[in-house]
Image (cartoon, rainbow, N blue to C red; front, side, top):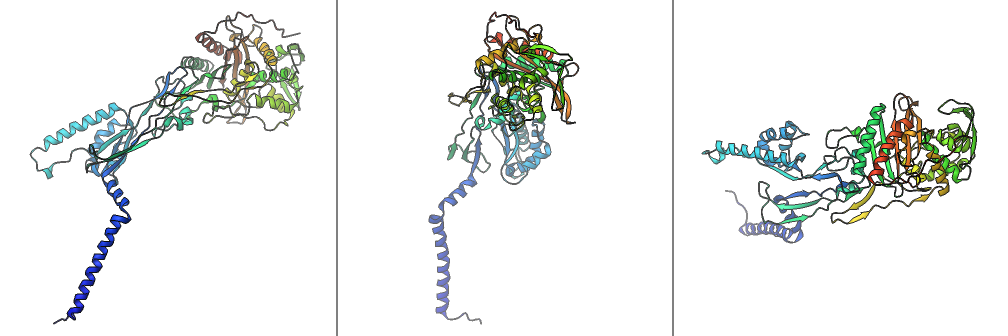
Length: 593
């Protein structure tokens, strides 16, 4: 017989074990009641709550008159709780796959049979599509219920369940392709992908909120149960300076010109002279943001593409020379057919012998040689400073994503050949807005006005906050600007290089441009850009319009290719804004002597 020891010892051991066990319970009770109550409460809550994101409404993008260019429309994201959908994933996928884009039957099954209790199945599903999905599920559920009549509860097939939705607005563009390259697009995740949608995403998107709800075992919200809500903060709306009507007309007109001259692309910009507000920034080709497009379609050539501007640059060169007192309307030059600069021969675009040209004649005939002769009077550092003041090699201030600053040789100790080339528009590159703003400074009496694309920001309460832009600054004197404007008026006269740009009843100042471009494939000059810039009425300028065509085929000329586009777009702007003809006549400015 096995002896366990003395009775007193056994009793003491029994009491000892009991005391140890009781001490464990006591310690655990202290832990639960005093040491970490919040973590256990949170754990319990997590098991019975669901976190629902509350998406902030994205601000609209509208034109200067409130015409909507980009808005958010109701849509939903479809989510699943795999713990509920796993048994019926194949049945649900068969219903969802034909009605959803961007996914497949296999992807849906994988999402609904995965781990965890949450999975996204589709984003930005229209209310119509979700209604159709619900209707089919309801019909399928009714069929299952009918089949299961009379069966034991444990033998019934489960009803289709476990799908949920959350707000997931879809971006819509009521005016289709109008200003698409400026406005840009939003991705499936609700964030801007290009254009102002990308550049102003932080303002437009606002801040999402969240809600925590108690749910039942099937994941459904429990009515009147505890819940917490952090309200979303709506995004700010953006009012642009663009005029939708003028933008639409400019886009159609540049499309016609690109197709007519078999160019690869084209741009038209119209700017208000005094305010710097851009009324039209039209590019072709463009795209429909409501349809299908490629990532390559999403750029904005007006700000992202750079090129050598050609003879439109002579407007800036002449303004600098006039401001420095080196030329005036009485300046006369004997211009040979070519000029040699650092052992390089530079010619005009037409063959000629020595010509007696006034400085207005140099501009009207667009003489490269005459421009170089005039520019050689100015010290190179002084010339470079004028170029910077006119905005070349500098950001425009629009802060547009992907915008290029152009390219200008650094420093101010340029070789003579660089100065000569830049004087007539080769040897530096610009974007179209930079060139427009530079010409605008001449139209504005010598004052450079930073271009403006965003007019106002409007919060959810309707409070309007004007967009602040850098202050204007004087570049050349009013006298110098007026003299150059007079030279430009000769360009649209019958003996100028662009009579096609003239507008009946209005005095028009303009300048043509035809420039060689470097072919990126060869690294050599092999392509061209033709352009025309001008303003009207020339005696009291209201608008500047700039036109550029890239890589036109066949005969090339800024006058006959860009001039008619300028004439039509400028005429539309003058008529829409009821700018009356001044009745001023074309000045009789001699071009020869």
